[in-house]
Length: 300
Ligand code: CP
Ligand code: NVA
Image (cartoon, rainbow, N blue to C red):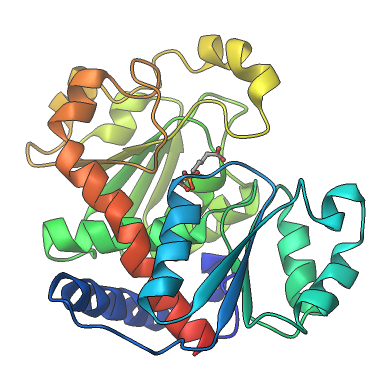
């Protein structure tokens, strides 16, 4: 695997291989088995948006694998002052062994991959969040035993998370139902692909989407970059929430996931969040293990 730009680029077999390696790396870390797979390798971490989980899990992941990581904030890089991404890509390719980038436009990530000569990993764009969904799939398999055949229900904004969850869920044989307010649906091409390649539903009816779900998922109503719309979005998204009523129509053993950060009493009630905290924080932990698998596949 050269890059991780979006999940659409990966086959079902490649996703499964990443998840298998992630499980192995998790087991080995818990048992104190050390690795030197990325010894002498350096990963640059470019952040044009905030992060807790992505930054820390990539830094620790590189350290665990014997390599090192460089945190590069766009506030300090010349890219933040307008140096073209095409030039940044060619310069950084001379110093680094890989780049993880979190930014706004998916095109910027694709341009880094096209102009640079080193592996590029997408750490979130407005379009998708592939690293998060690899950790989500790992967590679903850990808790449910299998991924295939489970029904995944996403409630909320049709955003970067939704786009990646649809692609990852359908590729791994889940049935996927999304509930979003009208006008806030996921990417149209992804929805078309999902309808042609699996069992997919997009509705504005939360209870219809949640019916008989095995996994319920939500994310913030206003993503990074949408801060100015936050108050308006609170009105539009009211009711697009995982709460006890939604849980009552899902399967009784349904799990709840959230990529975090969470806004309690907006997209999820505090009660449901705390009842499923073990699953949600396993999911956050699995960012580390899933990304280490991606790093091994891309950089070693
Ligand atoms: N879920 C996620 O990507 O978290 P951060 O924004 O903290 O990296
Ligand atoms: N949709 C959220 C995900 C954060 C991990 C955002 O883009 O801010």
